[in-house]
Image 1: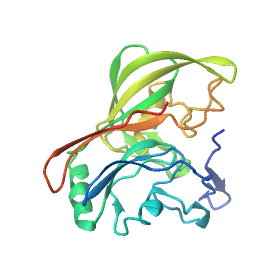
Image 2: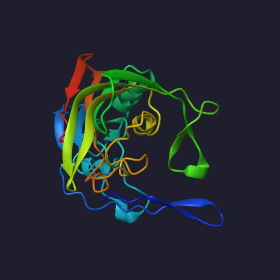
Image 3: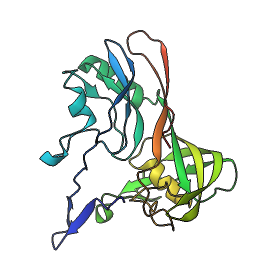
Length: 242
């Protein structure tokens, strides 16, 4: 079962991250490698970067620098999210790839299982997302202070899956974030009324039968960008394990 990661400490209203990542035995899969960059499949349950707590040392970066001493992460995936990440082998490549991300020249798509059956085949979620220290680490939808946030979804299939002895309605979807806000796909799915199965922050453990979901059912399955040296289009695909 996925446990809540954060606990408030009173009376100073300071939020302390008490999360200790359980050991992750899953290996990082290499999808592509050349002298300039790596493309990997991150397993669910592995941090992208090591945490401040020494018990959270294991991470994508920690593992990769053992063999690639100068590598840097161009972007991150949440602890529970699996899938494609691009890793630069030096600072120059990192800067070039970061520029593509900042200029929105990179396209990404995710596979997810949402709680419940969605009506319709596709749609757009256009809702600004804001930080709020009062509910950290959660984000919130806020028209007044939020940054523009837009996601597209496409229904792939409707499922009725047996979980904990109950038949649970689920929807497999393809999610495309057109912006890159923190927790965007997770909070937009909640706003849609169908949180991502296994999402501890935005309702994905609350429906009957979903409480014991083994992981966050979100996987970075598609990544398109331009190779920073050759200029060749890179179209990387990695199917979801669920």
